[in-house]
Length: 360
Ligand SMILES: C=C1C[C@]23C[C@@]1(O)CC[C@H]2[C@@]12CCC[C@@](C)(C(=O)O1)[C@H]2[C@@H]3C(=O)O
Ligand SMILES: O=C(O)CCC(=O)C(=O)O
Ligand SMILES: [Fe+2]
Image (cartoon, rainbow, N blue to C red; front, side):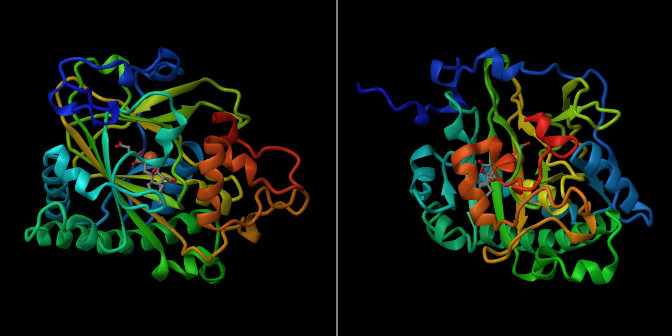
């Protein structure tokens, strides 16, 4: 019998991990795992949320948001519809396979092409109306999935607007300045993507990778992860003086059932002129749990440039980054992956900004 290509290996019934999915320890253990460190948990409805969020975005590029007002029942439905999708047989999921040149569908996310091994996960990307993509999966029975995901996107858009306002406020920007910032002004037309991720239990988790280390490219990402199943890790650099020379460790992000993970993406890093760090993160797998996560990526519409906010630009050093649209930036990432922020540094900026690029 001819053997299946490694991409079609069935992760759900595996008793061993094949060579195609076995990662070298140089990827898995590139930095030590922190023994006891915790990503800040912030109640975003608190009156002093902005200063806490500002500190978290500068030091971690990530925080756990509680008080977000997204109904728990909706989060439960999103998770169960995600599990329902991934529990379909492979040949059914392949009916919704993503095609070259289109973002949506079942398949490997773009970052996978930068790594020699396959990740222990499946992904499903939803951009725009999910109906066309999923009608092939459940002929005549896809409406609940679509309704849940559409409702979730509405909640996420509302939350993204609130987060964007608080994050800009934490950078010291007044209301009228915010209105002049392209991505804030164009929030109603924002480009949104839902990425559903499935990490089946793995027979040899010490040698497999759920999702390889990366930063997200949008403004920020809001991630809902299965309660109780850990897996997400964020790279934390202990640089007291912000010069990027301190020890760097992977910190496990605690899976708090009521919290959503918010991580700064490359476009906010650019907007903040490097004050906020775009968080490098990855997902590891475990031996027992089947973990799922749902990431909401948000960024400005394709015709809107993102550039350092003028009030945050040092008059002597100038803007650290040049203006760039999200599609342009995705194109750069498709070529240089984790060097994309370096590639969009403005020609006048002689020195890397404090913190982040040293994390790459
Ligand atoms: C808008 C997008 C963000 C994303 C690339 C994409 O076109 C759709 C998938 C997204 C995702 C999900 C997994 C991690 C990631 C780095 C990847 O390879 O695909 C992100 C991309 C991103 O943030 O650039
Ligand atoms: O599943 C996770 O915890 C991380 C997913 C992620 O980083 C992504 O979808 O970009
Ligand atoms: Fe990510």
